[in-house]
Image (cartoon, rainbow, N blue to C red):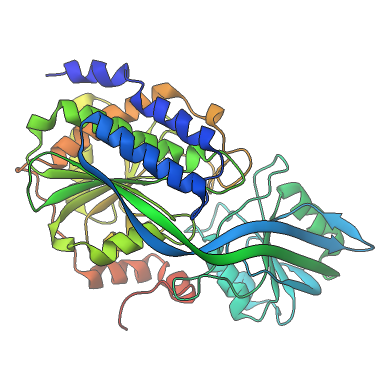
Length: 437
């Protein structure tokens, strides 16, 4: 039967939810807006027909943006924004431009008592993406007293993105983001010169929450469909990750209409506090029975481009399931077998729980408009949401079938893959390495 495809392709449930999310305004972790987004999502899942729609609250380290500044030369103030969970602090020191901020760039630099500046991208020839937090903690490890994160996307868009670790949620040194244009000016005029970096922020205890709801039979085993509802406070958070949560709502509506085909329980989870260190998913992973989770479909980066991309983390059964859907619907789905440790699937996948990171294909490095003022609704198309919802609905039904088995992987295999793929060093540096050596 394919009548459901027409229903999904004409549905406005997900897009309407996306519009409601972006109209909230600030959805920063721990804010009233994040709470409002969680409540809207809970209610949308209940309206779709999911049962036991509820909020699960937890405590977090709160951080609210104040003023930040870079002053170079003779009182020449340059535009910047603080990186969330930067300490409220300042530093006056020599600027060292490290270009891309690759590990080898840090090895050759003298950063003791200086301010490090790095780009937000990597060169085309480099074998893997270097995350912002990796670069920040390389600078901390080498004695830097300040950190400047320079966007590679043009348009006078300073990037945001959190620092800090699970054990120490507030970072060690003040950190700011600057636009590509300001970064170029700093590199050209002030590399090797003294400048002052200052961050002000309100740092206090706060609360966040995860959203849960369910469809399908009351089996112990379950398939998780996830996203995160929080977003950075500087923009609408349409791409990151209003679209992912809209997808969860769209899938709930589609799967409610196909509930009699589900042979395994499907649990929808929209996490809080993802942008400040995967806090909501980490909270869930600590309390969930991993053996009961058959697979995770984590939506973070969907709808940005028309072609769906699924990172499969070395689980061959996940790749097989995706390929089966692509063949059945005669529609492309990209599969990436490598590890991707930077979204809400990871607190589970790091222990061998099968999980997808569902995104879109992209030509550019990094987040594009994400984590900037330009993360707004008009960058997205309802057509893309609907097309990808059709494929993901079919994928979840496939995963929830009794004939589709997905083997968990031993945690030591995940650790070995992190080493082999060059991801272990950054994980250890940022305090995210969970394995006993």
